[in-house]
Figure 1: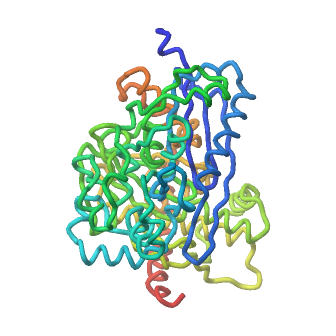
Figure 2: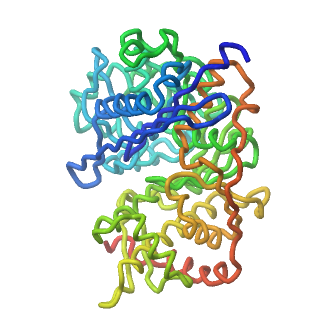
Figure 3: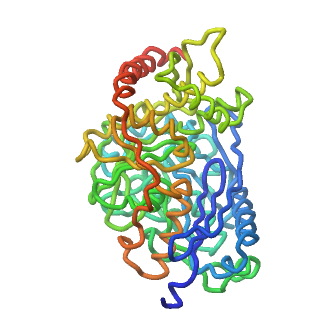
Length: 491
């Protein structure tokens, strides 16, 4: 093996609830991993913000943890890949420092601006991959122009969350195709910024960073950081990508027909394709992939495992204990019915004002029953996403599952039954986008064929749909859909 291919690869994922970092070798083995939690600020209803500098401090902490776990391996890092939560608006002034807290993907303040863009520029959505929605980056920038005009006027550069970490690591202002795809400012078919989209929100196109593919090199770790971390002075940083696309890379979902569920803070149902296929009428997101000449369609839900985490917090319980109780007592669908829309919803409702609900409560309702209803609500929302995506080429093929929520075997049983599809879990898939980022770093460094590097991991298990549960959940799914229609506008 050449010296170039004997190094190690660091994958960093800028998640909503925490920073995840993994150290991976050429045999795809994870030698060390670290997770550092970060908080969210909600200063007003519908607002959701983080301080970009908190991400960098968490990356430093994660790096120190990896170094303690595997000091010799850490020193041999040859390339770094980045992944991150999409749609966040990191706006920098002339000194390349953030002008304000970052408005996140689940920030719903720009609902009026998104609706206005949809009415005034109906033809743009086909170019940009999705209808304008409150959580997307450019509608939020239009809100900023109207409500914080002095800040908007001071914008020198717009970055996405992971790109701020790139800036801190390398000093480079750059992004990749898959992350730019989620801004509502990117021409999906031509894989470039849309001058028209920038114009309609009043943003100078010079404020947009240069774009690369996820497998390209964007810079080298700055000497002072390399010295502080104890790295080689020639550690490369790859383009990386948005978390959905990079999670796909981690499980080898890069070719036509591959599909998976990502069950993290938010939730996505993704199908990969070899061409750009917009489906804006169904509120499907059609975005560029993190690898060249690939795209994907996605049902994007704002509420995933975070719904269960919220329930556990309200009940004063640990999530793992609560899930264990649900698994121990599970016999079939809950008599409770929940809506999971704690942060509004995108697919299929495009409603930032959507609310959560639990109905059927009595004086004897237990915490375990509430938790089960919340888990089922997330499964039902995936069925809505599946309906929005339309028929798959093979409706019997297994769907992969990644993300922290995929650790629950019962949740996989629920999803398999509601979708009536086998669910496959891969070994190590809970490392998600951070692992995928390490693979992009490897390809950027070595020039290997992405097809040879981004391959599915070993299968951990396959959950076949239980026909009894498939039949039992169908009327509950229909009731779930009716409940949203009844409560819309009432709460």
